[in-house]
Length: 143
Image 1 (tube, helix red, strand yellow):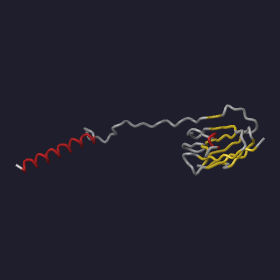
Image 2 (cartoon, rainbow, N blue to C red; image 1 turned 135 degrees about the vertical axis):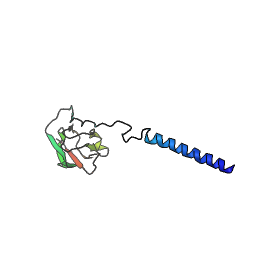
Image 3 (cartoon, rainbow, N blue to C red; image 1 turned 90 degrees about the vertical axis):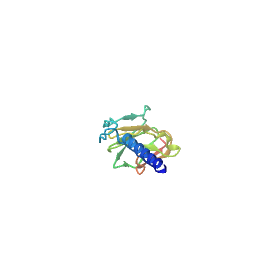
Image 4 (cartoon, helix red, strand yellow; image 1 turned 90 degrees about the horizontal axis):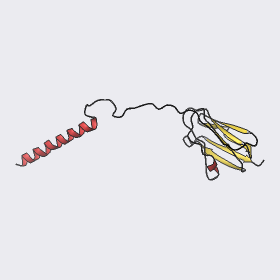
């Protein structure tokens, strides 16, 4: 009697395990993915330019090799900085600390541009949020 009870439990466990394996591996046992895959198109370059009037020069900072160049840019109040994304892959320009909240680009791709006009004399540190080793600084001097 004990042997029959044990045999039923073992047989039941084997049947349950086989059923689970069928569900997990897919009924046909195919090597095809369960969900269709697709390649997403590469996003187009984006130009984000402040609507504010630039009173003076527009200073260009390039992002190449996961580095901002020049790393530090000094401008006068009312002038602008334009970041040009020359690198493959995704990057941002993200200000640090309270002063840096003015700088906050979305994730941008190669060929994109992001431009801001600065008015308050101060120094603002920024990074690429995706590659924090890419660091830069904007120094805004009075006019």
